[in-house]
Length: 176
Image 1 (cartoon, one colour):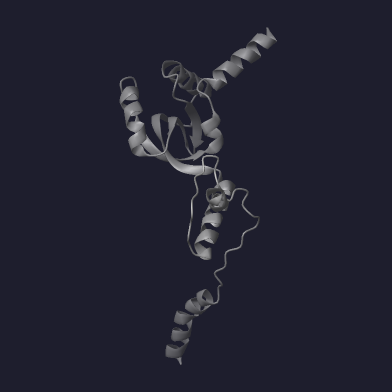
Image 2 (cartoon, helix red, strand yellow):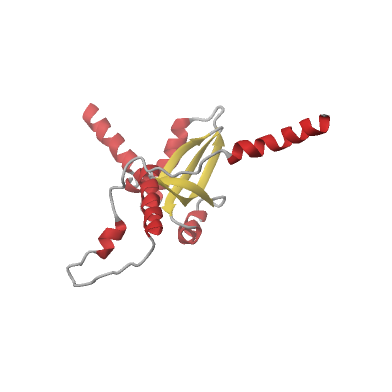
């Protein structure tokens, strides 16, 4: 009796997983159909013909939809400083970020909180190789800096270096 009870308990989880259905549902249609755009005639008389299965097109549209919904991509930044949040001075961290942006005006800097630390990370790079030239430049001033894989939001790509500094200066001039 105990043997049968043990076997039932052993196979019960497999039965529950076998009951699940694996379905993909698209909540809303994607806004941009890349397949349709490629197949339309261009101004320069170029034409692309794609012969593929309907399921491949559906998967491609699903991937486009997920990318539009996610609004982030996996990329790299260079971490120049990290400090524990306990007892740290936020104003000093902002000053350090601003000094970096004044030194390297072509590289945006971000002060972010990752529990339990504040980190200053700079740049927006698609892969590790892309960040190597800037990493060599930055290591001359920040020798402990290194590349870090991170999620980059599309809004971060629109940020201009020294944007926060310029906004603070405008606010101060309006107050005075």
